[in-house]
Length: 219
Image 1: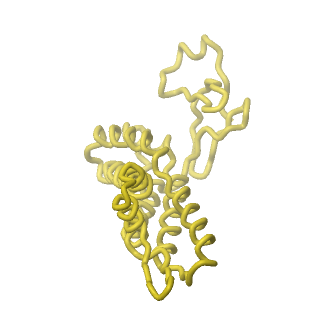
Image 2: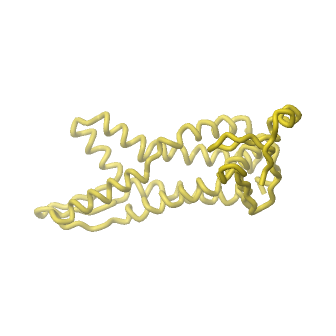
Image 3: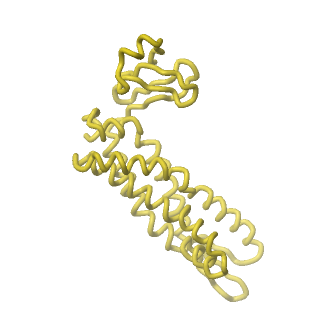
């Protein structure tokens, strides 16, 4: 557990040696962690740092898996609807087009950004950052891209879109013959892999690796 500091201790340390709690703002000396260890705030118990083993390799594998799931999740049928002899295959992309063609262009753009555009951009940002660490190239650009990624995090709302899909399926099941498509499984898989990637991609290790302070992160 890291130690809290007084004003005199703070003045003697560089910024790289300090860490502040995101919950209670307690300023502490940054602890040295080994694989599997984590540090908690002594005041409120918030998790400050976690040192994960082979964070870049594991994160790269998850980022590539998410990118592979992205296309089928968005372009394969999520559900198949049979109503009065007519069959319709609904995908995420077809939902965006339906909104646009029905005159709700603003909502269509918003749905596209939150369900397709921003999640893809986030994955590409993560992939670029991880590759810049892994191959030790363009780390200055990696720092910029990682900052952009953190600004994009709040705009990717796959879980909200999934809830909307489930609600629509519940309401439609009594009105028509409804069957689940493979796209829904891919969409759920994409959401789970992205959550796993968020957990695995330890922020402090990525920042340190991009700045050259953590040589072990790229192994």
